[in-house]
Image (tube, rainbow, N blue to C red):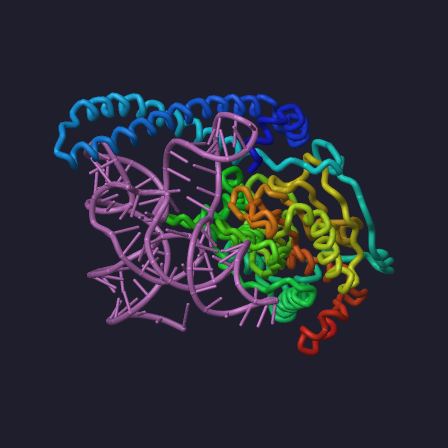
Length: 424
RNA sequence: GGAGAGGUGCCAGAGCGGUCGAAUGGGCCUGACUCGAAAUCAGGUGUGCCCGAAAGGGUACCGGGGGUUCAAAUCCCCCCCUCUCCGCCA
């Protein structure tokens, strides 16, 4: 959620920044106008309430003395009639302003490339050299099926297309990746959590999935105010919803493994085969709560933390910074890490690391108190995949495949593989 | 799922129709005392919004929403959550 006062005081700048995020100036005008009306309406309502409260106290005094208070009560009755109308308008404006604010995306940081879509993204770095294979690499789904470690058909039988059944060494590898990632992050100082996999509407509003992305993104439970969590960013970020943290406790670094559930409606036809785009996938998530002045540095260090996983696995990747038009709703700046996939002869997104500044903190009401001034301020929240486990599986299968059709387990995973060094 | 109890400030806990943003105790902060500390004493200690240059003023908030009333933390209704007992279950 954006700061209404910022919009008010910087109309032109806000309009320009939001244009990069495909938001027209009309919406900003609307919200600013409504806010101006709200202020005068609130003033009038406050004055009316003040008069009523004063009179009510006088009535109380008179009655306690046994005096007649009919005249005062008549005046209050008159006030109440007007108050009803003014308060109704006040409420209407509040709700409309809030609804608009909840649907506005975060403002991009000044160093984010401006553009309408992914064509304006910029590569910032590369690591590793894609291996030159002396045979035609197979796509991961074929490797998985041939080795009998991924069963797409039975996954679909059990739950439907986009639900994956891992078997034997495949299941073991998935679990190894999760544990390896969690260990890597907790060693770096992230506190491990095990979170609820169902989340309520308040939590989803806090991180920004609601109200805007309800139908295309989320599975909702029937007759319940509960949703399958679309990313562990939601439960992790909401740990401190409606709380005031102490400055000395910041930054707070947390991590969790959780499955992510996504309806992906509207994306039919894209990445229909294999593990790339599915309805349930595992992810190890990183979340940070930081002071505003430290969030940029925290963002860079979070990116490095996610990169570390790929380096340890020896998987080549590149980092890109997303353009204003390609960033997620809550992000003010976002790096994507893309891993090398031989079957594509190119790079594919495996992690997204975002600085959400105070956007989520304002929605979720996560604040901290400055030690010196005692003032409360919104924290900055950051989140990043560290990494998407399913897509890491893809990268391992494809990059570590051999001419013989086997897969050699990367050294970093061996402690987690119960003696399996090669999947045959 | 059934029966009961309860959700009040940083914490504990009173208030159960008016003068209550809220007693009291603890914590914390400031000052006095002290070489320093402890103890003691005095004062202070919520958040949002609006007006204001500021000082300050107004308003709202006692789990959430609605209602009754001149007036609601207090009464009524709905919802959420916690605890105890029973049932069920990993």
